[in-house]
Length: 377
Image (cartoon, rainbow, N blue to C red):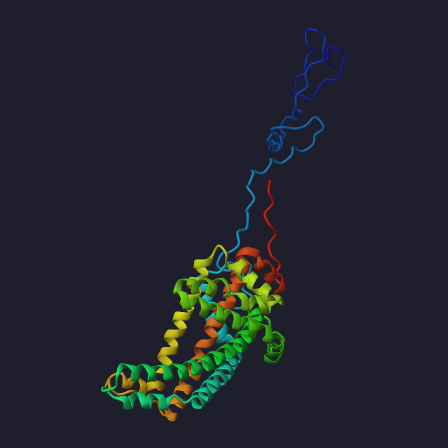
């Protein structure tokens, strides 16, 4: 017992005394172990939290840093995609020429088959006209005149030859317009499906083009006459109808309008880009003419050798020479003819994509969903 009457603590311990103000003595944080016992190690202290709400809730996570929205820019080389032979975007010169060559390579059976049929038809009409309108007699009379002929005799003979030459040229022009109409109609329908990558059946393409051949033939006649009449006066005015009405044939076939509407559509599409359209058409014509000259030269070997012969002698082609030249013309038109027609159709599609957003319509027709337009803030 202690002096205060309370129980005494363990042996060797000292009882805490009350403080001076009468309050109980302070309690230690941990009990003092008995003598001879080892105090157990204390648990490691937990790090204090920097902030706690009065209710004890966990503080919210920090806000993420602002990242500007990433706007997806379409690939200019592909545009809205390339389901067929051309990308669905405004085309450049390389795209137009490559599209024509790609179409000729991918659908070579139908392209060269149709071109061969029209070339044989054109060459046959030309050959018949040359045989029926025989100009060899006029050439023989001109040769028999000799150097002693007077100027009046030469003039009369040249007038007689001019009449026969005009008749042969008219037959050749008629054959060319018929062949061009058939080939343009078929290739326009084929190109309309090839741009979408759709399967093409030869029979269906011919059937679709056959329904528009008569209006297309009338359009071709008017287009050719306009260029000829303009060329009689000057070369520069001939460029105007040649360029402004160059896209009338594709417009007539693909838009299913009338001949007048096709001419108006062509003028509308070309306006503002006259020199660009003219330059592409001229380049295609130069390439076609150069390739045709290379192909037909071996088949006109006799006429070529006459250039280096006696200048006083007039070259008179034989029937065999005419047939051989016709064979060369068929081969040249089969290879070169589709190129110019396909370039014209692709140029029409390009002008519509530039002016009217036809690339979006073609993408939807091909099953491609165009990206949404960017939202304005």
